[in-house]
Amino acid sequence: MSHDGMTRRGFLKAGAAGAALTMAGCATKKSDLPLSEDGLPLIDLHVHSDNSTIDAITALSLQQGIIYGMVEHAGTKENVYPRVLSNDEELLAWTASLEGKGVYKGVQAEWTDWSSCFSKKALATLDYVLTDTMTFPGPGGKRMKLWEKEAVIEDRADYFMDAYVDWHLQILDGQPIDVLANVSWLPAKHAESYAMLWTPRRIKTVVEAFITRNIAMEISSSFKLPKTHFLRIANEGGVKFCFGSNGRYPNMGKLDYSLQMARELGLKHGDMWVPSKNGARAGK
Ligand SMILES: [Zn+2]
Image (cartoon, rainbow, N blue to C red; front, side, top):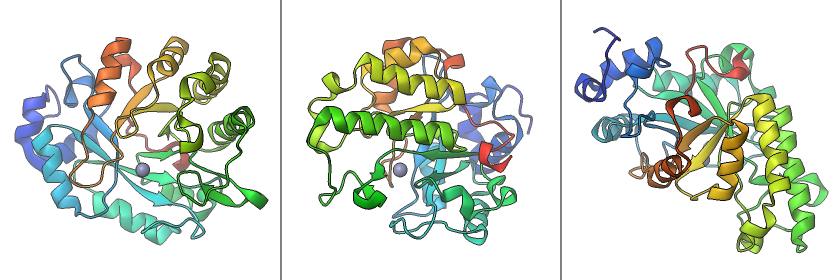
């Protein structure tokens, strides 16, 4: 099958093997990707395989006409998730299980020591690395999941925010990542003050780091974040965007908020980030 002129319809008709060919070949070519009405690539780069199989997920991808990027948690075993890839053998088993399935191969990296678990050669089997800032240094510098009830979170919102912005910079400046997901998410204690706490100054500080490091910003349909005022500043700064559902089966590919925000901002194909065939930055 030729890669040229691969339309959305062609993608749908081609089936998993055809999609895989397209992905492995020249996925950065505009015509290879299924497109939204606004001409944006229909890719959900934040799909988890929990509770399902790759084959069931691939079937759903074809049915929806949306390409998925699959991510598994990756980092040291100090990070607690049902499955955490922590060495080359586990990472290579993950990427091998996705080979030829018509999906992008990714991980959701944990904390700031994840890359030390893997060789460059193993990381080079990934198409991209996504991470987020939701695990934050707690008492004694221990990793603390900000969404858990047990999390010890500073009551004074401005103090929390300043530390949280610094944490964003540590990750954006210091980690070999391609995508930051769940951007601008706040713990329940401060979430109601989102509009007030994400000041233009704080947003600009974070956005500059995205631009300097050329990291893509996820527009998350699961959290419905970032909100419009945050996204506008990012867009004006020239940040590249991608879409994510953070979905577990069968909730992947639900990109309503992402597409709605893209339309509100008037995003064009060139504003979107797509994994390149050169693979994840961390593998270089
Ligand atoms: Zn996730």
